[in-house]
Amino acid sequence: MKFIETIKNINKIEELRNRILVTLGLLLVYRFGAQVVLPGVDATQLANLATQTDGGLLGLLNAFTGGAFSNASIFALGIMPYISASIVVQLMSIAIPYLQKLDKEGESGRKKKTQITRWLTIGITLVQGPGYIYNLFNTLPDSAFMLQSSFYFVASSVIILTTGCIFAMWLGEKITDSGIGNGISLLIMVGIIARLPQSFWQEISSRVGSDSSGGVILILIELAVWFLLILATVLLVKAVRKVPVQYARKSSSGKYERSAMAGARQFIPLKLNASGVMPIIFAQAIMFVPAALAGLSDSAMAQGITAEFQDLFGFWYNLVFGILVVIFTFFYTAISVPTSKMSDDLKRSGGFIPGIRPGSDTAEFLDRVMSQITLPGSVFLAILSVFPAIIVGLLDLQQGWALFFGGTSLIIMVGVAIDTVDQINAYLLNRHYDGLMKSGKNKKVVA
Image (cartoon, rainbow, N blue to C red; front, side, top):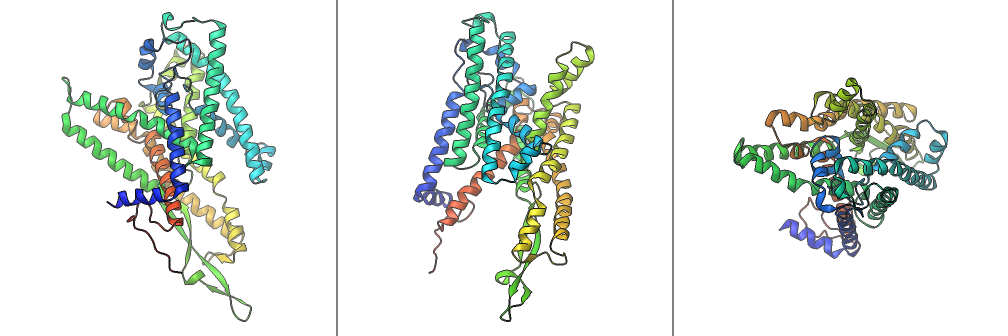
């Protein structure tokens, strides 16, 4: 009943209602496009491509695109080229003075960096597009191509794949501007969720079929473990370290006195996982590189490296992946949490941390606290990221279903869902309604 009342409250706010409808409409367009097969490809002969993406890195990429990769869709590359471009631009911002200058120009600088990211996305797509087309040639029978391997088919398909990626990028930006939540993250989350029912049904079939191994009891155990992992992920996303802050109050004599603002001590909430899902996305993008480079050689060592780094549930893949997650967590936290700016803002507003001198001492203290909480946060994030491999070893799950037990899939789903719910709650609370996690009753404001 409380949830229904909250839905009614959402419906009463026209702006929020329209934003949610715009978001759902654009997500529906994206899912529809994921089912549109490239012109010139016989959609009835894609079985080999679906088999190729049952596991490994291609399976993970197929999950991110919501099955568009295995459908030979116009959205086959999904939004991943844009993610790769964003990673490159953020990494280069550390070394290139021009990009550092753009960071200091505020909104105008952000728009220029966005434009650079868009052009780089086109470049990456023009490189990945031919690779995807030639993968189709190697995977599907010749009869699946109406125009065979003609230059016209390759050129037109690359243009369509590039256009599809740019259109998906536009959908994500449109959702961010006119809808609810982060559009790019929502596109990835919807693609992941689209694979959830099929993966769960395959797991049920394997457990209760003629060659069953565990039956219904093991399915219930798996769901219980999955629920606990979701709770752990929520705790990781929401956990904060509250740093107490006091403010100086001007007395009647014109002097400043130490006191708590509005009669209560304030806090600076430093998140345990300030970098969100970005470290996993960064690490996942890097994990494509070793297999791609090793694939250029036919030597036995190169083939071994390719096999190791294409096995999502192998030991070496998960060891390297977990280490990269820890490293990128520290890296992204360092560039996304400006402790010096926080210290300057605190000093200008007359605030101070008890026992810490304002200015550089405060910045050093905040930086030290962030380092202390980022270490356990990064380790916890790394454990969640490699947990699919652990759960496969413990319960022998189907690989598609195991991907939802931690890793990129679960953390993206939980993180994006929490961010979207927080934005909806902000709209409700601004209109004096309780949020989705509250009672759902109207709040009366006394004039």
